[in-house]
Image (cartoon, rainbow, N blue to C red; front, side, top):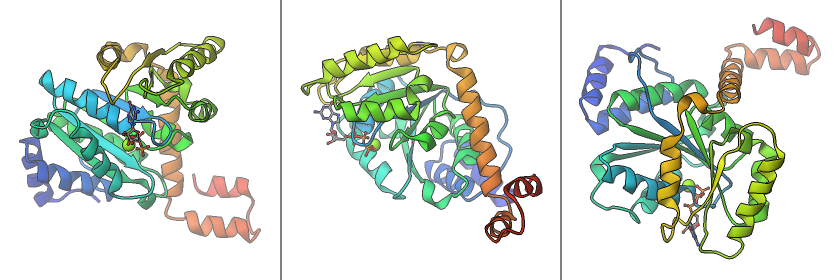
Length: 288
Ligand SMILES: Nc1nc2c(ncn2[C@@H]2O[C@H](COP(=O)(O)OP(=O)(O)OP(=O)(O)O)[C@@H](O)[C@H]2O)c(=O)[nH]1
Ligand SMILES: [Mg+2]
């Protein structure tokens, strides 16, 4: 559905800085609206990692450093289950950092459960919209570190993998292949035991792998140690050096999946396969 004249006014209002109208536009995009926004050059960071490792807390730290430098930071928290908790939680964590910067921070959570085909086709447009509205640092946080999270963070031009001192978490990220997509790795909770060993074990795992080797930073979102160095590393990522091929492949796969799952005849075709009246190959052919 294309946006109407009213929506055009909404867009202009959002572009001139109205946050409520920006929220409305993002909701419209989530609901499947699409519109031309013109070419943008968004600055994007994807943040992923197992649940509870401190992604939001660390983003909170980065946000205060960015806003101190005059950046405007927007965060899209992609939450597979709850429509609200991601953003609410993140808002709590952000209060740990600077308190008077709310004009320079915009947080929005997105629930993936309403989108069988995934968020992929909507995410790019949301990012473009945020960039057009003047948000100079756009962060996409995902909960978890599995295949669907890779698909989401691949829409960002740089990827930060956050891990905790717990070996189990790291194995999870390794299995999902997320390390290959990461430009920077942060082992958070350096104030806890075993974090140095965790960082060392990630470094040795990376030494065995082929391809580019992301830097591993030991940080603490609680006491702030290592965060300056992490920020400099993130800022130094140049888009041309990033894992472009892998990222592009994931973006393509995301869009492909979305198109397939959002196909108007998908249920009909699935039924035909289930009842044996067509083969899987025929199903694919008929959905092209
Ligand atoms: N000791 C310690 N605890 C931390 C640190 N960073 C975060 N935590 C704690 O870890 C818990 C999870 O923090 P979050 O920032 O919500 O982690 P998250 O990765 O965003 O969690 P999900 O979004 O639910 O996956 C909270 O209780 C934090 O207070 C840290 O550097 N050191
Ligand atoms: Mg979080």
